[in-house]
Image (cartoon, rainbow, N blue to C red; front, side):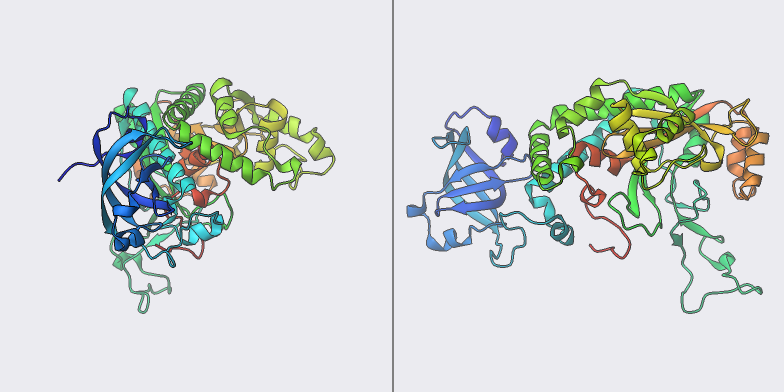
Length: 482
């Protein structure tokens, strides 16, 4: 069987009147003569010209939008406008028919909601083909960045008995029967009779386990699925998403900031260089979408300008305390334009505050650090010499234009006694995390890490506005289709 050539290779080939075989899906078929063929390797179609006078009528009828075909023909220079090369077809084989009346992905504009309902087919559209190619390259760049720098890839558990964030919004994992659940004498579920002999959940983060490995291998990273049972039906939340979490022994907070900034710039730069056509298409898509918005809601920058903005600017490093002062004295706050007004130190910043700092005040990506201990997780290192009631931790968040927080991280609390006190204050069971505390008992050392929600990164790079559109099959409240 003759090997077929990918469309992206044919479009950049020098036409030397050679015979080629191409396989793909029909996007359009015009005048019984011109097939626009796409095989997923590029956003661009290749034009294939059919000799309709010498092609059986039955075959021509089967060349419909969505059908899969194999074509053999001669690659030649194109006489028509809009393409450099085309294929003069000599042989057509229909690999899979597609009923033109029933095929959902017709060559017209579809709403994003309609495409979500057809998530199994939406990747055949230009927009979703581009998004998923970009996602794939970003994923590869993540591994390449860490592997080139001597990090070890660690697979942390998906089923876990610990809640890394103390959030409590976790999916339970059980093999107990729902219709006859075993109970204790007190009437509670008897997890001792469950598969693992204890209460278990789907992980919200691989961080705690990654920390234990960093304390032996030096520098590690995880990149895997995480789960939140947060009943939040917004454009920024998923119940199942992917997290990138590096952990580095002997790194302090400043080192952690350096690593996160360098990492983000690397993966974005790598992807921009690989996907010029896809990103130009997504940029135009975003411009068309924003034409329907009021001027005040439109982005000040195009997609590629926004990406270059991140690549070309040093991230501004600002303490939480400085940020609160800026926000408290800002016009939107004084004029009560913020939905959540900033009145005092200790407030948990919302997306509107984060975007104001990035887009209006500093006009560059921002790293906020030294947050109030009360609004951050138990494992973050307590700063020394802070005022009573105003204790801060060595936490950092990276804020991006159009998206708000994209990275959350910290220097971890390496002191055993301080960590135990923090856990007691928050009601976290020491016995449940005995193994985590062991890393502070045996050879503890300063270490730091961060978490980056991969879909938020894909959202930023593609210019999409709903996180459900940057993962193949989104899992959200009341939706586990496909």
